[in-house]
Length: 70
Image (cartoon, rainbow, N blue to C red; front, side, top):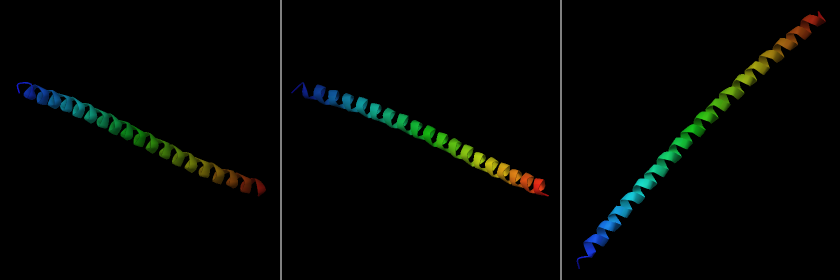
């Protein structure tokens, strides 16, 4: 009968450690998700800037072609 409180406290300690490890894993996963979202946003902005620059250069080239034709 004396061993029952020891067993219960052992289970409680193990459950606490398991919960701490699970919360640390969740925190790490959320930090990785935030990093991935930040990188995706940067890639999107880079692609948008490249598309705008390409459009500008295309329009400038067409203008030069038109001027050369005159």
